Length: 163
Image 1 (cartoon, rainbow, N blue to C red):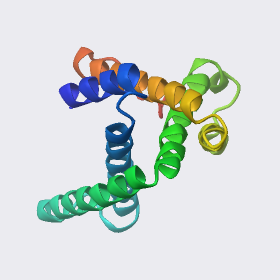
Image 2 (cartoon, one colour):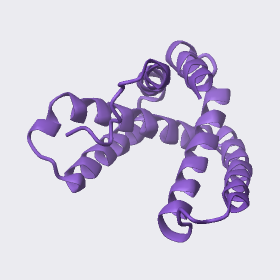
Image 3 (tube, rainbow, N blue to C red):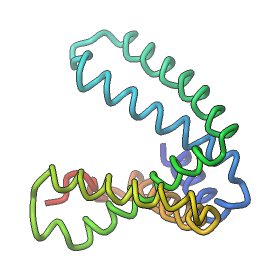
Image 4 (cartoon, rainbow, N blue to C red):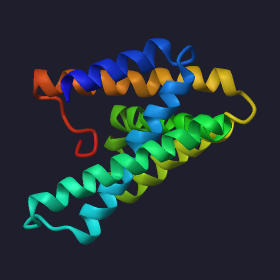
């Protein structure tokens, strides 16, 4: 995971606009996998589920992610919206974890704020495509890069559990 996070984070941060199609594809795959796995493990699957079921869910989410990534590359504006939304979400995490968490511990406000940041950045891609893609890939890439280093360095606090 360390190597994957550092390589993907580096590519997103420094080559986001230059490699826009591969980055949109990677974003589509990763976000689709994350969403499918999150839905399955929060609703259907429990901790005592057989290992093979987990592997089937992982493989299926990867295949679905490949399809979504392909579609997002073909429809570049939609892919840019998703990519900018991911960057905006990372920006929302950064802002929240910098000082807003001191004001409240509400999980609902956390999700409203981060999703609002994602939507604002996503919608801005329709009028400022290049500028927002550059900023979004830099934000998302730097977050993933540092999180990858945190895997090895240890003591990197999970951004979802900062109190």
